[in-house]
Length: 372
Ligand SMILES: Nc1ncnc2c1ncn2[C@@H]1O[C@H](COP(=O)(O)OP(=O)(O)O)[C@@H](O)[C@H]1O
Ligand SMILES: CC(C)(COP(=O)(O)O)[C@@H](O)C(=O)NCCC(=O)O
Image 1: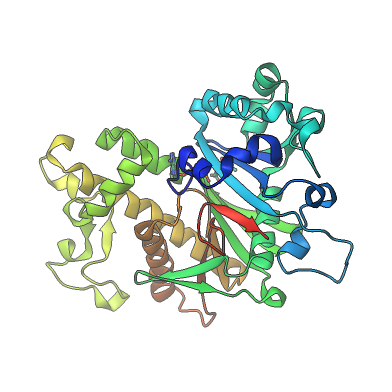
Image 2: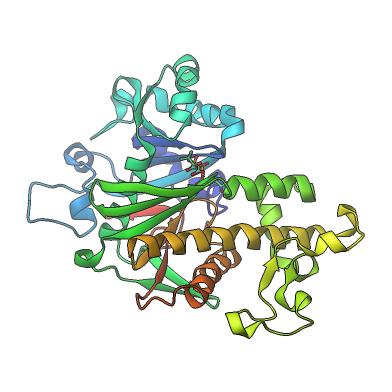
């Protein structure tokens, strides 16, 4: 399955079987939880590819007037594998013959001299494994550099790449390229990195938290016995966190604590109700546990992000990373976390905007980017 649940078979049904011959621009991000793979698959053969260099500027409408740029037609494909099952990734690469594709490719080859770009901690951890199994050398690229460069590129080059998410509504926003910086980039992967971005290549990692996507998946797995991340997320959608979370109203006899701006339904203490109830874990519904966990972690990230935005006077926060994956409830809770802080904290006059970097093709909203 790829990130949007499309199987390889389906991709082949859409013409992807040509990829063995025409794959180029293969790159990997090997994170603590997931391996993300991207490769470009040309649509046409022949002269177009020979002259074709994947031109980010022209294909994405950022042409600076340089007419020497040529455009490569095709699709960028994304796949993911669990890092703990890295052998599946190696087998996929082997089956696609990525390691032998160098001489067949047009433009930038998959692996000229069998060297591929790789980022994330796994680029260091698994370098020897790639060499041993596929004869490939990983050309290591710094994770934070890649993250910022990728976010800047997408936000500037791809129209409608980000959206706000409030009250169940996604609203795609057009970013004004002249008014992009500074912003706070919050990447929610296994852990969470918060980066103040001031320009192309100009950034500083200002904060982070170890309570991130890995925490949700790890704790959730232990508490609910779920077998997959999607199962855990699915559970959280149907759960009721009020069964386990202690609300302000639980403490204040059903009333708001309006003097300090807390409504009776605000969570006073995540998982707090479990303290006073004489119940074992098995007596709670897994879906309620999953829901409380997702709320706790998403709220916490939203609040830390907001406080960092406030710390540096940043008016925009962009959230990205695979923890989000376009999931409505996750986004909703993060937005609630930011806005909860916004309403209850320093009541700053700076407008906060919450954007979430999308990982979809902006033209067809599927799991690949189309360059045409
Ligand atoms: N199918 C999935 N399998 C495992 N984790 C997933 C999946 N989909 C989303 N996630 C979440 O995404 C997180 C990983 O996000 P990612 O940005 O890939 O970080 P990393 O680079 O650390 O692997 C996981 O910890 C988990 O919370
Ligand atoms: C170490 C990491 C940069 C690795 O990135 P990841 O694989 O989680 O995407 C990230 O997990 C992180 O920033 N953790 C938070 C550490 C902290 O600030 O407490």
